Image (cartoon, rainbow, N blue to C red; front, top):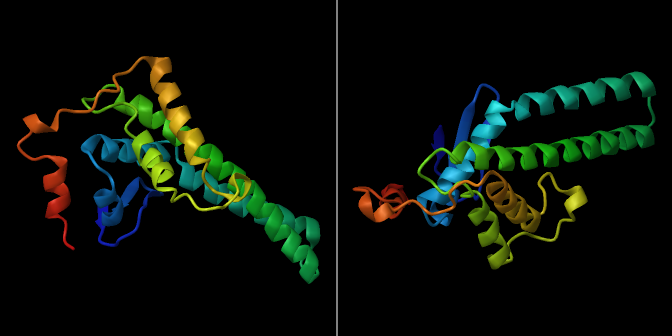
Length: 183
């Protein structure tokens, strides 16, 4: 796990199980349950090998389109090929995001953190109306409202504890962690 010092609201997993979290996201979240939820989500991407599968799928689509259209495809068919490839990749990515949300709940269900910790990030985005205007079908991620509902539904389905961890009993709480990050 690596922390990137930049004011970006993101975290991501790469092939090999490397997870990167931006300080902007850490500072945006309000409690350790929130960060645990995001980390569970990224761990699920690594565990489920989503980035490797996405690369395999992307290169596979490019190869198939290259064979089907031939090497001397016109500009129009090249654009069509890119659009077709991107559409398939976006749907695959949305499925991977939904699966990572689901696994995050399962991973946190046996910890001291709220098993639905990942929902709070999306809820906060909704409340701040910071989700942008990109239609869901063009986005690599499911709609934040759907994600909040799906994460909480999964928590209810498996009956895990949604109670926030008691940070006041810890000698080092989430606020201390946020304050320890460089500006």
